[in-house]
Length: 326
Image (cartoon, rainbow, N blue to C red; front, top):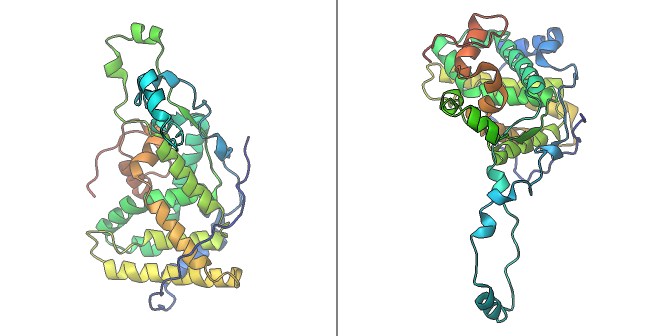
């Protein structure tokens, strides 16, 4: 059953870092404002609820299931009599540690037909956000591709948070003995070339999303934060890094002004937003691709598809496309 994540704000001990010099208002600020007022649906600020599910039910199978596969409980076997005699001299026995083998389980989406569609919608809105920024299109084509390749994951994750899209996963089902017999000799040809994500990685992703949910950002905060993420001057290979840096500083300045207006008593909110944003940037693209998009695109290159969406295709066509050099 779907439910809205609680709006309890996470505490942050990090002090607010000094801001870069304030730049005069430019086209970026006006473009972000127009997106908020004129194309709010593209930013997902309408409060539309996505596919929501209890975060406590990330894995529906019990951790005790398939316990015969667990090797932890068999690593410390002792001779029963000798161990009993020696253990009597131990004043303190080590506490029993919970088996962590389930953290290494490979998992998949419980309802891929629903969750993948919701993720696809978020990705389309993310690309639409970039399409509607004149400052982005003024950049050299090579810089646009470099920024796209480096920021599509945190922008997509921010879209998941804004659209309140959550998900459930379950342990990847193993083929039955009958399937192994019937598919003998064909399994190698039918196995996908990608790897399924592990439970520990998915739980870290869910934790990062939950932390962002707790901030309860406004549509304006989302818009300016997306601009600050998109225009990252630290991406290697940029030719207009100084101009991109000025765009990022402008977006951060606008974000800080909105935070001060909406939350005048919360002096740490701006620094907290930037701090938690860094967790989204640490999520590997392979995890997002394998979890949300492999069931749709197969072995196709997700970056190539995103490039096609940005420059050529108005609706997502989940099929392999010719490679475009970044």
